[in-house]
Amino acid sequence: QVHVRESGGGLVQAGGSLRLSCVASGRTYHMGWFRQASGKEREFLAGISASGGQTSYADSVKGRFTISRDNAKNSVSLQMDSAQPDDTAVYSCAADHNIILPIVRAAQKWYDYWGQGTQVTVSS
Image (cartoon, rainbow, N blue to C red; front, side, top):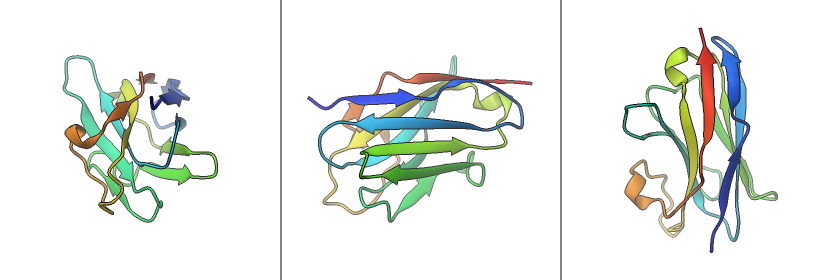
């Protein structure tokens, strides 16, 4: 059983920063961050390959969010800068076990293991 757990959510003012962390048990995976705002579908934000050598971002967060990983700690982080009220959502981390393919995939269907999510609220 693979366990994925997020932490670091909370309340931040518009223009501020927040750092989310995620830990996945077991071996190394490609990892992705997603979010779901109230009344909206879950969307891909950023992904990072198992080696850390490849990253991918959604246009909505490119230049504001940064994904990184520390494989020694089996953890992945999402640095959120210049937060906006539209960033308010439940943020989830997920693991893609198929690391034979050296690519980061955005589609949710490729991610096998999901965390419970952490709430991020950006106040205006």
